[in-house]
Image 1 (cartoon, rainbow, N blue to C red):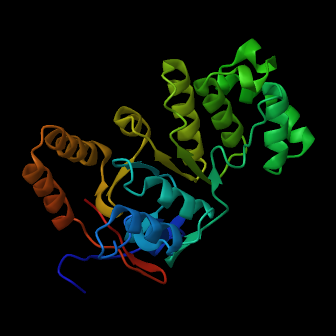
Image 2: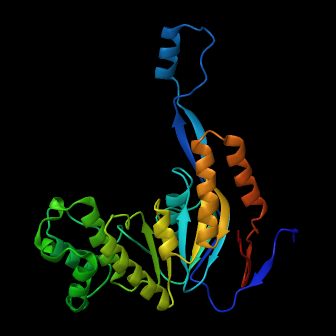
Image 3: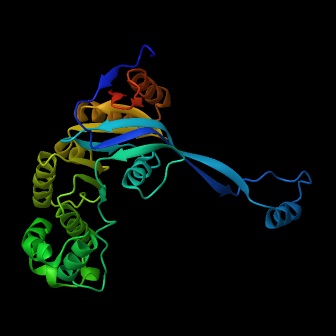
Amino acid sequence: MDADEQEIFIEGHPCVVVDCVEMRYRVASSAAAEPDTGQFRSRFLHKAVSKPNMVTVRALNKLSLVVERGESVGIIGRNGSGKSTLMKIISGQSKPTRGAVYASSTPIMLGVNAALVPDLSGDQNVILGCLAMGMSRADVDEKFNSIVELSGLETSIHLPMKSYSSGMASRLRFAIAASVDPEILLVDEALNTGDAQFGDRSKRRMDELREQAGCVFLVSHSLETIKDMCTRAVWLDKGDLIMDGAPDVAIKAYQDFTRHLSKGNNISATKILDDAKANLVATEVRGRSSRRSRG
């Protein structure tokens, strides 16, 4: 065991275990090697007839996490840091290049299982979305009013979905997805609606889900949302796990990092990353034992 690793035995059964997951993509790049002639026409013809140059994109580097019941995990980071990739892997939408994810039940990804049809009204979409997630019609009837109440749409629930703003549609998707009492709920940027009342309602609902022995993953660029709704924050950057710990600590470090970047202080920003990585405790899953990363 390395000096910076600590072995922790997990009592009971965690909700989600991410075990040494990596994700690589092979994509075509226009930056193919140029012919030696140096002539524009030759270069153009070369690109037109030659095979594209394939490059490997490292979307997510080796990463392990253990998430227990009752935890609400916020995932923060710049665009392209691997946040949505990690969510897709946990939800089962994407298969990792290496590693595996173990879950105590099927994760519910907000906006995936609750697919909405623009030409249908909000109330029709409630029925459609709930049925698609495995509810019976009796279950839908029982939960219909609470779904509408959580969404805050009121009389707009009878209007076509295509007339909704993006915020209204996001609120309805959340209300539908959260209605099935999922043990594992994944929310990707759906709560940034700018509606304070909905923020309060959704926070209460997420608290209820955690109290029901479940866990929640939340991706958001709104750091206040992460701070208010999460018990833990994971900071990713360029596919690397940078920090995993208390939301206020991880968010402060991330804000310091982005502030230095915005001012062009790249050396200071890099130092923050290096310091955070140096304090990270690596995670390795071994049967019922694990090493859990903490920043």
